[in-house]
Image: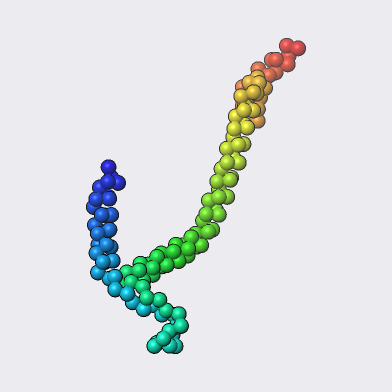
Length: 127
């Protein structure tokens, strides 16, 4: 529903404005890459003005995106390393859970108080 509202309120009017811009600026202009010869340039193209403007916007968008992507490299690298560490620790937790499930409750484990030692001693005395 929200996407439909966004489409009606934003995308359609912007598309209409761009279409009107393209129709109004369809006259051809000379795009020259020869700074020395103005009469007969060696490398020149005739393109509609809207193609030139949209092409410049597209090139700027791609270059800006590439710069941002390159500058965020260290954050992506850090995120990958943190993800690997989390996965490693998840594996260790699962291994410890499995080990704890198969552990004899009468045998004390490190970190348990003296209450776990008493049943173990009673078991030894019964032999």
